[in-house]
Image (tube, rainbow, N blue to C red; front, side, top):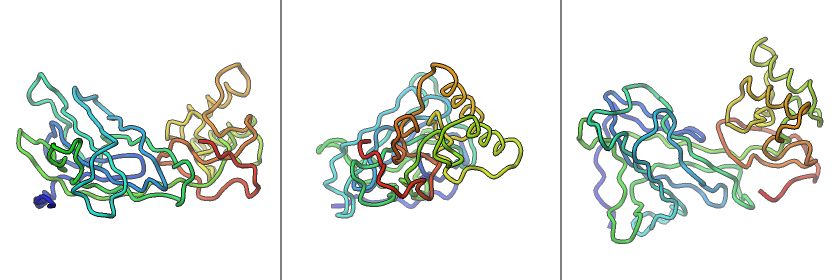
Length: 257
């Protein structure tokens, strides 16, 4: 039988935004827990990382028992964390939409859809005899139920990493196009995944530097898919960047992610 769900406190919000979990909190948050549901025919969850100050305790489980969830929940994961196990009062400072976790996604092996809803849920169990993992924040030692805002993770189009100007080649012009976007107000790449050469989920100067070193020194190649492999593909690590339209319409596509 579904367990009772408490009314949420509007001063606290957990928000899913692409590969990020954002927290709005009126007071310091000492820890918390929540469950996430997603469509396994579109994406797979491979990990959850704390951003910012690392907690003393962080546990995520991706094989939760779904016996109390609705029929619409096909896959999920639970997360629990405590900022400090030894010092009272250590907490995530009050703030608005501050990034607290990064969710590591990859496309499903043969994705049936172009993306998936990321939904906060509190019906998952880590084992059959355990209680459901609640959507809860610890504030001054009290359990607070935050409000939640579900999100969307997009698989995006097919591209070659290192080719942000989309001309089918990786060369110094691609590094310059990234710098022009960042510092000269020029048009940024439509397919930002192609410019994210170090695959950290951000488009910044390190991508231009990484690309230059790859082109002109024996440094490691970018993360796949990249031009040297002569294959297009979807981003194997889904993040806040995207590629709204594929860089190719041909059949030169990498299928093994």
